[in-house]
Length: 315
Image (tube, rainbow, N blue to C red; front, side, top):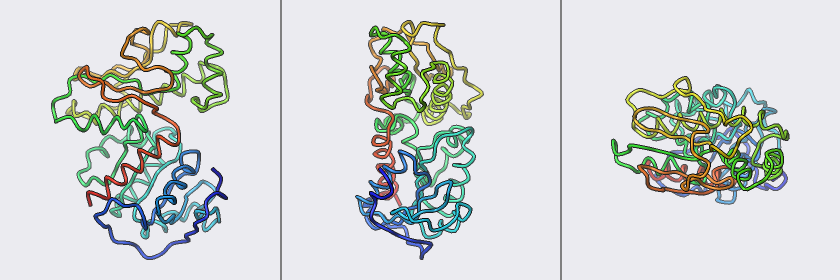
């Protein structure tokens, strides 16, 4: 989805808009951070629903919805006052310091923040304890499956166990190998299908990247579950790798109980509850809650827009 596909142009900064208690996105002035696959799909969908693109903040500058450069990246704070809401769709990197900067500035100004970036949430669990409901992060885990919403629907103190497949890339590779495909071919297939965000067919490289993804998601799920009085951090979690050269014996999952968080290749590869292919799946207290695609631009954007509508209905 190239910038040329987007026709509506809205330059800024401009006068701010008051918050209105309506779930309609139409007419809302939004600021989008990031313009990769998710950012492009997000901008296109926002425009389709009648939102006004106040600006798209990219590393190379700030752009209009049609791709015209309006300012340098360093001027992004100047675009905050007139934005009704802020969407964060930048890649997840390190401890999420860049995303955290954007979030804190927006929240300080009372702006709703809808994010798909995982590292800032996982590295700063205090953000999840905010009482003003302006920060929404459903898209960080399970994308379109909306796992976090399903977890949040359970009454406080009622969750005894969460088990889930949260990484479609590793699940796809493992399930294809179990089906009889050679590991190298399964990895190449995952890359070709776009499930792995790399062009390498080296499983060790993919595992190193996806391991961090699984740990971040586990931290977010654990802190969202209400099972722990103290915040769970990445330092509390050890990732268990697969047995050397064997992707059929174990599958990569997250298991959370009041006793702690287990992450990695810890589930028997033949367990019936596991999802197949790139699908994610969530079980709470032994009950299947949801299964479906967890990653990709469309499911992620769907979760982000649902989060925005929820914010609009609550303010």
